[in-house]
Image (cartoon, rainbow, N blue to C red; front, side, top):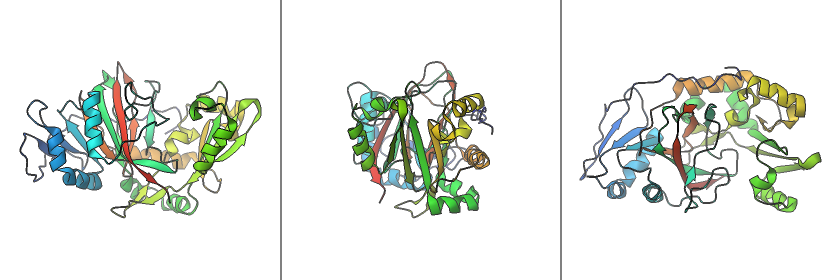
Length: 344
């Protein structure tokens, strides 16, 4: 992939049920797998005749088991994209929802339900694990479809355990040894300002916030701010013990910028001044070739389905990385996150 391409995943026919699980059900609720895929598990039913909240209460162990095995569950037919129903379900499915999450716009009347990332509809949001560049991250993430777009707008997901097995061993070894260094430059007039991002006008408050996250801070001329943070990229799942490639390389690496945009930004600010970048933890460069191999592995192994109104997708954020494809027409996806996990 060169930096001008977008995520290219061929459309698939909507999958049929092919596998049933043995669950003691009182409501007309079915559980099956997507044809040709190992994940997500699909829980389907009719919101007029099935109590999904009672089902979840009685089958919480099954849901947790499926998250560990498959990484994701898709709930379909229960009107779970209505804000109040979505919040109730997400709150019931985890121990604590995350409020005041700075990277997403809050929905009115709540501090735990958000809109999806506001990003141009003709652009791709590449694969990433939510908040994997920080000290803490949600272990569970929920997406609910209020309005499916006319075309495109799917949310592909990929199992990061598979990525760990397929990526080059030399690359993974360097990730294990050094981790990843995420870099962000706040440049006035380009992207969000540091004042809006940190919700303060005080440089001292910014430094305190960065200190709490073990971030390095550098103040530059003309109101510029550079922050950087080293994190582990290879993690063991705390329950299964499986190795996982946990990262946001595609959201930060300049390879995923439009080619002309990349060249212009380098000409203006230099390689060190790019708004976002990622390197190995020792500061050495991650090549475009490796970035492309990661992209190819994600596309080769991802699962994509068409959103239906009312769908809810629940993922284990440690196992599953997600993306968003370009779209046309109105599209609205709600997001919730829960059960923070912190780096040691």
